[in-house]
Image 1 (tube, rainbow, N blue to C red):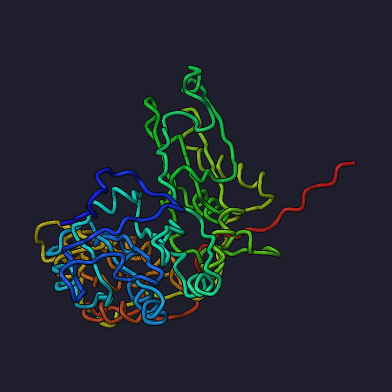
Image 2 (spheres, helix red, strand yellow; image 1 turned 90 degrees about the vertical axis):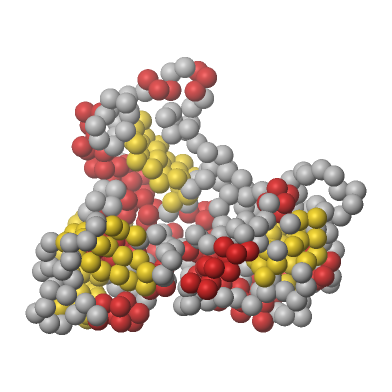
Length: 429
């Protein structure tokens, strides 16, 4: 239940610079009182962290935001806000013993805060100063020790604003006005521009009405690195699951790889993210990724080649001759979403290739690519813990694989990689 102070009888979205009403919030977990008011934290910086139980990024950040609260306990208060009911949130943590539960107040069953502070996508953070003035509406990655310390020292902060995005109409070119009447009749076009902030992240493949294969690609808010990865991976149908499968033989990689320091992300994103759109006639659909590769190479003066190189890998091997993965033939089921009732993600009576593809994909940002040396064939039954898959950890994965007589061994292995090299433009006479 949510109660707004008397006299506040309308609901108008709040923006940066507005004063936040002193909401009285109920259905609170991890709080000594049955209700919570923003004025309870008078004199402190308040950060509202909107999340839900299906958001991997939110769950993975719990330990981090809890540490921020402990680090600045006298000066800030972080409050978690979920639209899911109290029993649903409580049940989530009860059934997932390995998921870190932060010692932070949790508002559950939220409807009112989201009306006043509408958003798309979580984690979504709203910073409110000691006078209840909204000073930032931003992404979760901006809540760092450095950004909080900077605000507490200067009482000012400049973080990128997280907007409510427009959803693009992917049936027509984004650069045209469909009211002109000719947009849908264009047979071929491609363009690259700086990313459009007001549009959501897009990574889409589409078929036009007369095409049997994807003949349209739209990507927004992606780096040069990610564009080349998509082009040569041909829509994740090839081999480039892991970013380590890409070798940058270039002088300065700072234009291609996002910095490790999250405090630098906003500035880097502004300079280095792009919008790319390609549409080809249906009879050219088979060549769509080759055309994309040529576009990128011409615009960014890079040359991409597929090569075989000996790389550090995590090699999946058998530890016995037993076929410990063999399916028992039960009902064919797969559950590899982020949440299950028993904290397990599994393939039951599915092909080993399906499991291997999912494993490589979920560990695509890990330190080393996963390669297979098991020679397994046929259908398998296998379950891996949710924590292992949502926060890729080789040590935890090795423990989960052990019961199937499998192991991961780090060694050099010949694998296919994408090599990107700089092309020096030819001088004109």
